[in-house]
Structure formats: structure tokens, C-alpha cells
Length: 116
Length: 111
View 1 (tube, rainbow over the protein chains, first blue to last red):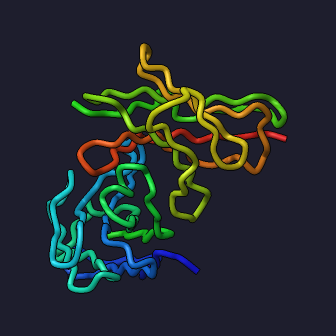
View 2: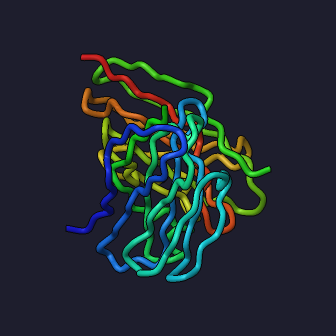
View 3: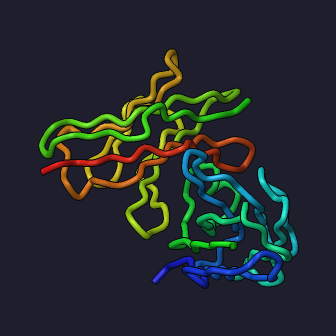
């Protein structure tokens, strides 16, 4: 089954404790992206990757890091989480940039992160 | 600036009645417009898109959307709502190889 898998789905942590949210897709997609969803703000892009070893900042990259060493994986790293990073995070993938342009984004089921 | 506006936080409709979820956009050039739906505890799912051509586009689950260039709108519609349509709906517009999403509209369909 074609899917985007995120882990963990739920996490409660404390300020400053490094954490990683993993994202993996099995569709051989070139494009991957991370979003955060906050009430009243919709989805905002954090980082995206056009292909292996190519990553770029989105609209709200501060406090986050990503890597794209393999095509299928695109982990989101919070080196020193803060309470303002409490949010619902979504990973998404698409075949390529053309797929993004035509709206063909596939989303994971989300990771709800709480930073105390 | 490129943006998408969904003016209603929530839309309530009785089952069997028609529904409309509003979206307006601001983008330079020809817009590529999309609707996504998010069911509880799930990721977003693609519903439909407008790239070019007929202003009325049809999508999944009986939804359709009407592109209106003069009003810069792309409202989502369905002739007869179902309780199972209750979800969070996002409008989005393409801008330089990424999608800009609206803030979302919660649709509640009552039996």
C-alpha cells in the first residue's frame, strides 16, 4: 500500500530535549516536505526537499533541521525543542515538483508534539 | 503577497442540503487551485484541483468547485451533504513549486 509513515504519532517532551520525528514514503517520490498545523494558522511549510541531499527552508524553519540522505526518508529534527513548537506535524511527499504543482501531495497521518 | 483566505471557521449544514465552503485567493499569474480534506486523526487527502479549462471541476466524494477569476474565488460545493462529509477542509494555491494553504474550514453536517 502506498503510504507516508510518520513516527511517533504522539509525543510529550520537555524543553531542550532533542527529538526526531521520522518520515518514510514507499512511493519512490523525489519531493518531500514538512508542515506544521496550528489552529487559525492552517498548514505552514517548515522544510522541503526536491531530492536526495537537497533541502530548502520553507516559511517557518527556525528551530528545526532536516536531512535527506535516502530518497524514502526525511526526518525532522528539533535540536532544542521549545513550547512554541507544540503543534501537529505533517510529512508529505510528491512524485516531483511537477506533482506538487498539480496538487498531488500525499500526507502522513500526523505527529502531535507537546513540549512542556 | 500570495495567499489563500477561507473566511469561515465553521460551516454547519443539515444532511441532504447543499453545502458551500468558501475560498478566495491572491496569486500572481494563472492560479493552480486545490481542495484537500482532513478527517479526524488523519492526514490531508486531495479532493480536486483547477489547473485550466472548465471553471467547474469535479472531484472525489461528489464534491465540485467553481473557479471564478473575476472574484478570485474557488468555492467548494456539494449538492447534497452527508454526515460523513463532516471534516476539516483546506483550500490551497500553488506558488513557486509549493502549496500555500488556507486556515481551514470545519464542515459540520447534522443528521
